[in-house]
Image (tube, rainbow, N blue to C red; front, side, top):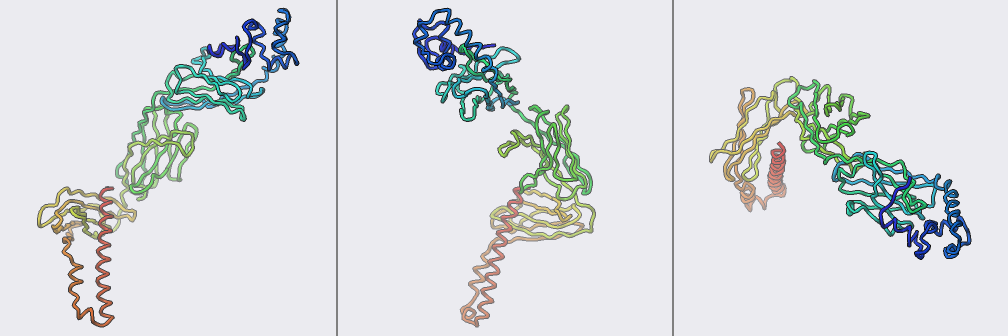
Length: 454
């Protein structure tokens, strides 16, 4: 079956055929027998000589031409690839590979059929280098056609896809009578509504060490059945850690303690971790992978659910307390204590410490640490008070009073002119104080970062 091409292509069957010009009086049946094909059928005949042939010969030649090329056209094979499920606004590239013909000598085209309807023209490209291209008016600026003669391929690239672009896409060659035919089997493109992926995790909270964690993720806004989804663990300060991946064919996990499954009917995925350890604390996110399994795939994460694995029973442990500050920011670090219950507060003689906030978290060593942060005046001394197991601990931080300069200035000329060993001791003490100051600044920065993270 043949299908008409756009008007600009159909007009080639008259005065201009496959790059050759004819007088109007020859535009009858022989106008469809282009010179390259006549050279095969009647070697040595010129186009001009055909003008003097009788009408009966013209008809006979045409019939012979069709019979001769039946076997030739039966060998032509076109295979389309690249169709897929895709969302509105995205791009797709379709490729057609041809065989059984001298590819560079043929104009090629792409057509679309919706829901089994007729094939509608999309784009075409001329033979040779493909200098002449035509695209359907409604798709100009979104659809582009190109050919690679060395690979016998013609491609259709479509951007900013719309729902009406869905259908089966076919490529075709120019046929004997300037019509498109020899269509392949086609490749199907289905354009889904614009992606509005929503992922919501649940099941977090506090869980005892050694127990089993069960989480679930509810998905919506995309085609769930054909999507690949994963679970990740993110601990603040580190990179997300992959745990498991699931699609409609397989499930992969990162360890023996982990199992996962999906329910396509409810658009849900599940994660289970047995024998919880303290290292399993963190934020658990489900994610949807968009792409084809390559490095350029995009991951869309849910907001996550926070899981805290609580340490198991052990002997009581009293905390260590440190106070650090940077300008008006003050932090009280309470480390390595058990059990979890603790009360920490910041106070100042000059004025109250504002914007206080306390965070307590387990460590991988099976104990707890806490941080209390607040704001105080630059010149105010600050005291951290900690109550744990009925015992109260106080740790203070005094404002900078220029201790180092005083120590340096207290060194008399007599000391500096003393024995070398004494001078070395003085220098070492000064260096030690400087190192202590640098260490305090480093700890200050560290806990400022920790405060921001918590």
